[in-house]
Length: 415
Ligand SMILES: Nc1ncnc2c1ncn2[C@@H]1O[C@H](COP(=O)(O)OP(=O)(O)OP(=O)(O)O)[C@@H](O)[C@H]1O
Ligand SMILES: [Mg+2]
Image 1 (cartoon, rainbow, N blue to C red):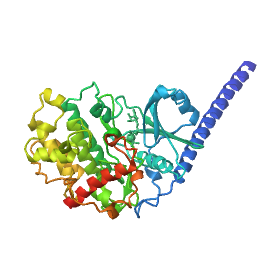
Image 2 (image 1 turned 60 degrees about the vertical axis):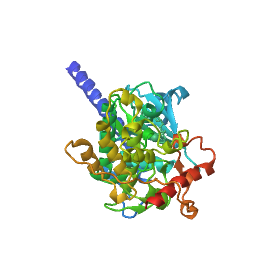
Image 3 (image 1 turned 90 degrees about the vertical axis):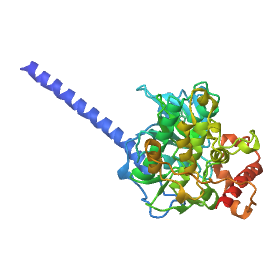
Image 4 (image 1 turned 30 degrees about the vertical axis):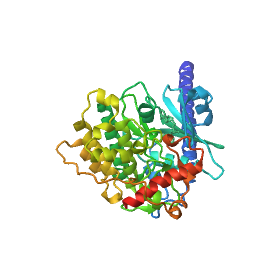
């Protein structure tokens, strides 16, 4: 009898202990969730956002983890320089490993006095927690502790596309891989523009923002500059953002922003993927310096094979293989946004063999001899644009202004 009572007592104690443990863990998890929600609620739509936007989209929230700073410090070996993967306009990115062995990439945002960085942080969390696609990078979680703002992504084995295109990388991307990358980016953009529950313009499509997994599946990254849009509208942006050389003329000139600005950048990116060169390279002979201009001249003279990376040519690639893709790129670069195809049309042109691709007209940024109207150009903040690596060293801001002006004047001629 006494034996039975003590057994029951023992069992009851275990059950009470287990229940308490479950309660403690749940409260702890809830606290984390609440702090993420609080951070989320603190997000105010910036004055730049177009009217009519949902102020918050908590109903669309995908679950992301909220990390404490020490966890990320441990995962990255105290943010050791040897773990640094690279550094962009918003701060360094470190590789790391969590206790459960998951590999991660941690972006440590530098917060500016003006709040620069904070907006990008919240924008990235907001966008990436409400959308999901195999061609968009996956945000694992975030951390906001004191002045620290950290974004935690799944680690991409092959890092970013620019390393393979421009860095004399020993790994050669054959045409099959390049085409797969082009199509994957197109599908990611189609999802952003047309298929996700909100309409999103990325605003910074470029080679370094395309990450590649172990099978070279492309994933669009960096949503810090992305903007949400009400259906079927363009809007005027007071602050120019993006990267020189990829910027659509109507956006650079007039601040007119719509998904067609992404489509323009995508056109530039396709040409870079085909040629393995940056969009602007002032070390080349004059006629070759601006990639869209050079590509058009070659296309117009039925010599587009000249644009192709010599390693691809040595690999047996022929004009017939790349011509349709070049045509799609040039269609994306049309001066007027309305004459550029939508991303679903791009995907359909890239995938359907039977489909006739329309002949492109002369793209934007063509005639550098037209006069520059400085009044039109100078109101835009050039500092807000992160510079394309090919224009570096851009320490002299006047040089950049002239560079941009040189290109903008060309747009005016095309209008
Ligand atoms: N999830 C990731 N997995 C692996 N490497 C990554 C990941 N995210 C970023 N990187 C690496 O870190 C580098 C820096 O990225 P970051 O986005 O900060 O800079 P960027 O793209 O060069 O410039 P920008 O600030 O204009 O986007 C990238 O070029 C890439 O090589
Ligand atoms: Mg980036």
